Image (cartoon, rainbow, N blue to C red; front, side):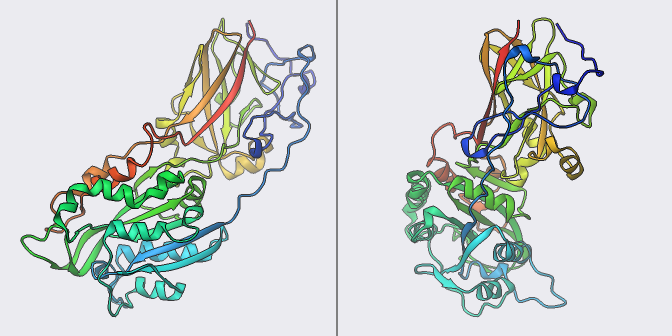
Length: 444
């Protein structure tokens, strides 16, 4: 049954706040709170015999990123980068890629960065200024280009490629000299990115359409080998490849102006900071309901007469920006409770404001809060899990794919087959992006 709380007694007898003990250990620990806020939490009381953790190990800062940027430097890409001027606005490619390489150059999150032009041989190292000149349209003679599988293979076979972030910028048009290769496109891609599966790397794909000026070379050569375009939009792509946690950091901290078309494969993050919040928060609906109190490294509750509701905080700053949106999390986060029933309350996921994080110390470690409900707890003990499953290939990929790109459009020949090769490099289902767990005890 619910236990009433007398606000006249010392607050320390009625609540224990939960905070992360340390990301290094990937476990959940609890801290006693010195907050003077009124408590709305049911007390465990001294008879429970648990002692709150007094100190928290300092969390280690993430190691700086090492990034290599590869720009396909071919005649087929030249139309994205016309020479501009005061009377000629830049293309979408020049705007977005110019911002991306600039952020890569100046970001404090990156300790080491290198730049390459992918010509018809091995990638060629160039200084940042030269790469920027190419994006600005200072292109005299572009190379013939390298076929897509060979370009990817050359990039991933470079020294240290599997230990850093590789950013690949290309139109990803595949027009092989041997027509029989078309039928093997997924297999060719899978072979070319073999280190992805061997080293358990992640691949993030971003798609954008941009105005294009000049010679356009389609994969399908009939009825014409090439066309001259004057501002029609055609797609290009940015692939980010590397260890999962590094790809997550780059896409969250550096690729700040990423387009809406995104696909992620093998993306995982470190276990995020996670804890139930059992103090009174700004919103009345966030305070605990039912008999809920903190004990040891979890929660003890009585749900025999009523459901138990409580708010949890998570630090999701390492997720891609699109995945940090409350509507994405509300749709994809799963709540699992063996021997029980638990759910995420509708419309309860939200970002914390800067004022909330700075004004309430208990919220400082977190970026998001969400509300959970436990309506059944049959076993004496159980473990509640919050899981973010990895989304499969999104619908936009099919919409951006075509089997005939001879007529220019915001579609790419065989894009679905190219990304099928990427998807086949991972197990089914994809590993979850993260899992956090909270021990529960049934206080019947």
